[in-house]
Each structure stands twice: as C-alpha cells, then as structure tokens.
Length: 90
Image (tube, rainbow, N blue to C red):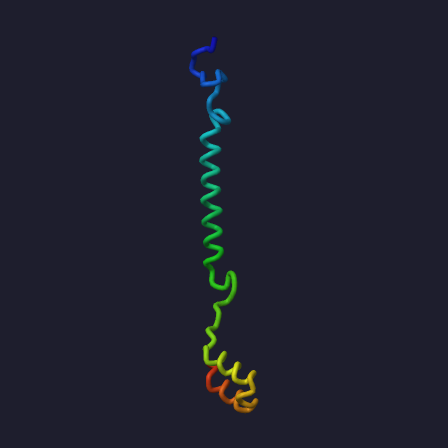
C-alpha cells in the first residue's frame, strides 16, 4: 500500500519538488538570467551604430536619370550635370 505522509505524491515517491529545497532558488535564478539576457540583447541593438549606419535616402529622380542615361536618351555630360543638380551634397 502507498504510504501517506509529509512527502507523499501521486507516484508514491517522496520529495515532490525538483532539487528539493534548492528548486525555488534555481528557478528564480534561471528567470533572472533570462530577463538579463533579454535586456542585454535589446540594449546592445539600441546603441547608435550597433548594427549599421543609418541609410542615406537616395532621391528617386536619380533612378530615373540613370535609366535615361542607360537607354541613351542623354549623353554623359548632361547625365553628370543633372546628377550634380539632383544629388544632395555629401
């Protein structure tokens, strides 16, 4: 017969808690480590320049100009002049 006592559980094996008295401490420590890892990961990616520098927006008119030059509608001198007019100073 299964014994009834302070450490009795469904399978009849005593204990009932994982790692005994250190179980609660272990899970608390694991939770803290997971939270710290998430915070570290998020803060690491928030730094300016952490991944890549911000992209400089390219005017859409430059794409049209390059297409016209590629099709031969404008010559090289006209292309370079219009590119200087369109492109933002760097």
